[in-house]
Image (cartoon, rainbow, N blue to C red; front, side, top):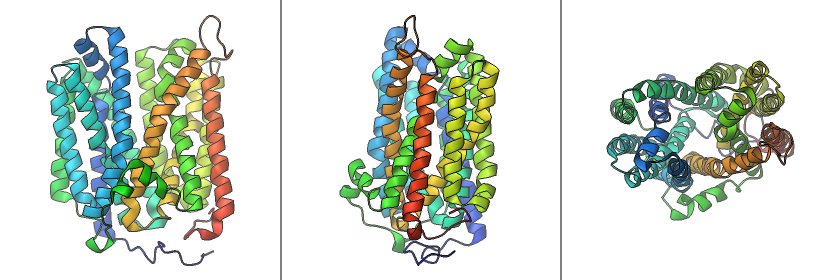
Length: 428
């Protein structure tokens, strides 16, 4: 049933003609793929390069942790700034400058003579990769609200493809030299810049732009936007919990797989590639038909529930084969992210889409800092000769509970604020 007119409903926000919109979507997907591939390429060799420059694996562990924190910190600070700049000057220049800066940054890291130069490179990488906020805002500009979940699903699929192909290519190039993947990453980012320079149209027309304000561009000001509407606040909490639970894989997956199942590097690498392929299938192929049948909100809740079931099954799986089997229901977790993003875009104006995506990226950065520390501590308490927590899969069960709580928040928000939504599918 149609609801009362909403200030940012499809009638108030026009999308570009279909051929131009499709061409722009293709560009965004290609750019996202190349950008994520460029980041993924350096994953297999960055720790080895740090170890080479630091001179010991003990110091390398400390530096690697510092580099992760630097990257996440820059994301937290700069994502709202870049999003606000795209609201003021348009998406195209911000995306192109960021991609060009990322290419130059990889050249800097390829040539870095010591750890301090490499640290500078990670800081610049955190700043320039914040352009993903403009990518998501661009998608919101060129798609009507009822199609945004599909658009964000396609971006998610492109990200997954990049994270599958990038580390595989980086591993091959790393056999040649620890610095070769950085040169390849620079080339991919440079290719994305040239492609965008000649192909990318602007998506935010001048009359839709918003004056720049430091009050909105700083991370704390951007987060205030998430409190501007009751449902937006609830969705932001759900988004944070989703990010928080997801970081269990970056925090402890490799350790858990080795300690519980005796898996080595090639098994773990193969499983991570499988995770990426499953995520590509779900976000690229399933999001659109499921949203069409169930609506954004129900699809979001279903995705979070399957994520909770899959993660719990991973924590409980007594054998490696059962752990692998649990990855398949867990893959449906991919239904949640694009639908949360789609629902959130409906509660801000077109001129605030960049600020919204910047705030979302800052939320993800906070989770990226806090979650690995939390799950790392939980895991350390559940292993060893005399563990404080008697079950090695405790961290996975906690992550499952976090996702179940996120699903409850999403469902209750929909029940409480449903009359204020602008559009719906059958399940909204």
